[in-house]
Image 1 (cartoon, helix red, strand yellow):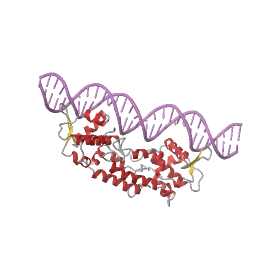
Image 2: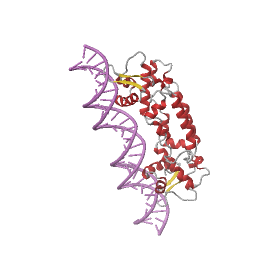
Image 3: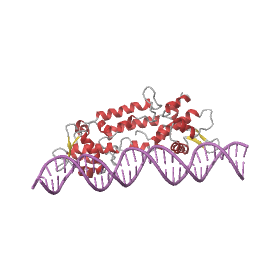
Image 4: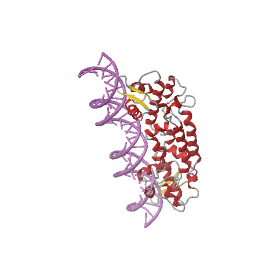
Length: 146
Length: 146
DNA sequence: AGCTCAAAAGACCTTCATGTCCTTTATGGG
DNA sequence: CCCATAAAGGACATGAAGGTCTTTTGAGCT
């Protein structure tokens, strides 16, 4: 798997809230999971992390739910990938050599390193805002599992 | 994980045999697993596949073991990755959208597709021979987990 | 204050890649 | 022909990611 399911769900969840928060109060987990067709409780744990990190607002209780924060749109995908542990995976040597680095490279190191850098550049350079910009709520269909 | 452990072990195993087959008869699984510090029986199953595919020669019984075949050095990493199921993972949509393709892309599709292509180019364009070329057996230390 | 709603927290289950062990099969040597 | 050797095969164990359920916590409403 290039990215874990957790990363995929995190991205879907943030995008959903980012796309639909306009003019609404809070969006409930129930709705998000149902529309995106994603496991509810598992998504719940991930949304929880996103709230703790300030990537989303999360409010308990009556009229509670999730909403965008000041940082939501500025959040790069890299932050989500770090949150879900996907970055350590990306950095780990293909041959699991613990001594593998630029000075002491495994046979694939120098071939793979540039690609790693491109991935990071992509993830660091793409924000939630970038993905949502100019999209209307109808765009949700393209982020659902269908 | 960029690549599965199976892929890493497969590559390590092939490289070990490719590097040390010169002037020797057969190389036993015991030795490979011990030197590479890799789980013996698990590696055994992977080497088995490599033998079945003709990427290596495998011989049972007395003086048996693994050796290079005519195709060993010509084998691209892509073949190993296909063998271990890593290519289907690379191709699967990050958002798990089943309808995601060039015509009906998920929000990340067009950003990720070029990177996928680069990965494939790297894997298809790099053979075991490329990795072994000009290396002496001492090179094994760089493919062991240490 | 008490009620209701919705997220948080934590226990538990499932699945799959990984890893181990034991038995079977095939090969060469005496 | 028998024995030792080494891979193949299949049964089983483990661990981590993914997924579910129930209880607890916190917030607003009346």
